[in-house]
Structure formats: C-alpha cells, structure tokens
Length: 362
Image 1: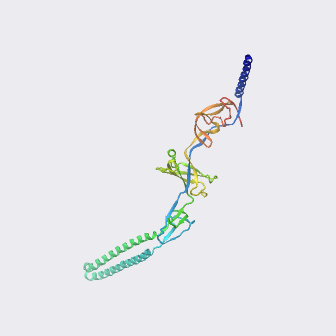
Image 2: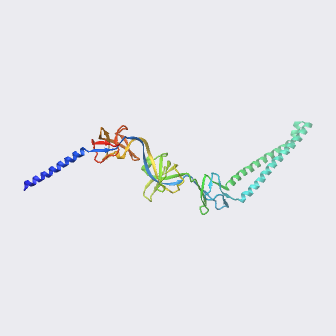
Image 3: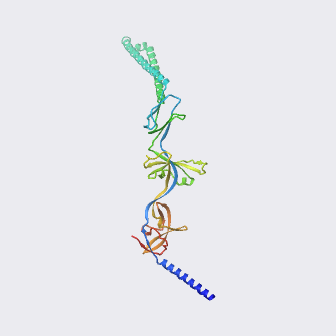
C-alpha cells in the first residue's frame, strides 16, 4: 500500500514539474506586439493647485455726505470716465461768499486804476512846473503827494493779492462741492442709507485671490504664470501672473488650516465677460517650467524606488534604468538614462521582460 502512495506522489510531482517547465519555456518564447516611440523634448512644468476667488481689480466706494444737501448726477448702470461728476452738493453760504468776494476784487482793481490815474495827473503837473522852476524843484514840490500815491498803490495791490488768494481758496472749497469718479468703470450700486456711497468698478479687469501654505510660499514667487479654471464655466480658461504675495501671514483659527499667506493674481488673458466677483476658481500656479526629454507615463515601469523603460534593440526589449523628474501633461521628464535617438516601447504590455522578443506595430 505504501509503495502505491509513493508511486502516485511521484507521478503527480512529475506532472507539476513538467507543466511548470512548459509554462516557463512558453513564456520565454512569447513574442510581444508593441508600439514604439522616441523620447521627445517637450515643455514640462510643475503646478501647485490653490483654490481662489474672483474679484474686481478696480473698485472705488465714494462716500455720500448725507448730512449735506446733495444731488446725484449718475444712476446705477451708468458708464463713467475718470473725472465724471457723480455727486453735487449745494451751499448757499459759499455762493454768497463768492459773490461778495467778486465785488471786493472788482473794487480792488478800480482802486488801483484810480491811483494810477492820479499818478499820471501828478506827473503832468510836475512836468509843467519843471518848465518854470526846473526838474529838481518840481520833484521836491510834489514829493509828498507822490509818496502818498505810491503808498496807496502798494496797499491796494497787497489788498488785491489777498482777495485773489481768498478766491483761490474759495474755488478749492467749491470744487469739494462736486465728487468726481476716480476711475473709469460702471456705477454698480448707489446706497443712500446708513452707509451712503456710490460704488464704481471696472467690470473688465479682474484679479483672483487665494492663500498659500507655508510650504507653497517657498516655491511661488511674484511674476510666475498662473492658469485659472472654474467649475461653473467649464469651457473657458484664463491666464495671469502672480501680482502680489503678502509678506505677513493671516491666520484663520476657525477652520484650523493654520498660517496662510494671501496672494493675488492679475488676470491677463481670457474672456472675462462671463466672470463675476465671488466666483470660485482653481489657480494652477506654475512654480517650475523648462524644456526636457520626456516619455509617456505608460512607457515607465516602477519597482520600489527604481524606474525602468524598455528600449528596442535588434527586435528585443532591453530594460533601461532611468531617473525621473517632473510629471507634466501625461509624460515623465527623463533626467538621465535615455537620449532622443533611443527607440522605446511606449506602452509596456503585461508580462514583458528584459530580453523578450518584440514586433513593432506600424
């Protein structure tokens, strides 16, 4: 009985051994149909994704002095240029003061003209007297009158200069009766309530704001490119540059996210007609961008910390260790291990090993 068991076991082991050998031989003799490609020089970039919010780049709030009498010169929706009058205040006191000052200035000019005529008359009388008694005696005779007229003329000029100065100050005060728009844009809102104000903004110029983590703030710099997308507007994208990164952090203790560094992005390209303030967007900040040798992600096999590609040499797959860099647009940057002249398998089939025979598909 024991002899039969041993014979049976030997037969089973023999079958398993021959089957394994056949499988190995079969695998070793497999030929794989593969697609080939050459490594390509392409632009690779490293992007940091940050949530953000759209804001109007230019917005001004012009306060209405509700305690004074005023007239609004614009309506909501009006398009205005920089310098367009928005609010006009009325002041009876200033109008009366302006009229009084105008009268005083006119009187000052009349006084100066009168003194001038008296000087001309005095000069004529002095010249006539000089013909009879001589120039020196004639000048001495009219000296006191001449000095008196000179004094009056100087005093009149000083008074007029003071009046003109008051007029300039009054004109400046009168200018304050009219509030003008500091920017070109659209009147978005007029509030005549507790916080009375006119809100004006440029609806064509946008910025996006977000917050950087401590780690991201080390990589991101002003002037770097930013791609902008929105879940609400799927068919559009925008591009911009980082305009400002706050030096001081803001800390939001409510959401527990810790220290954040606010930053803004100036939107430079893209159709902004569909954007609205408050839209939530994704800011793809390009922290690094360069030209590099690349291969498709499907051409790379990774085992532990080592990456391989398969080159095609004389109809066989040759395993080649490579050093990977950034991942960008479905491709790996190859820092070392390949050249542009190599032919690689662009999509590694299951079971392919070093030395496997391959047939390149057209």
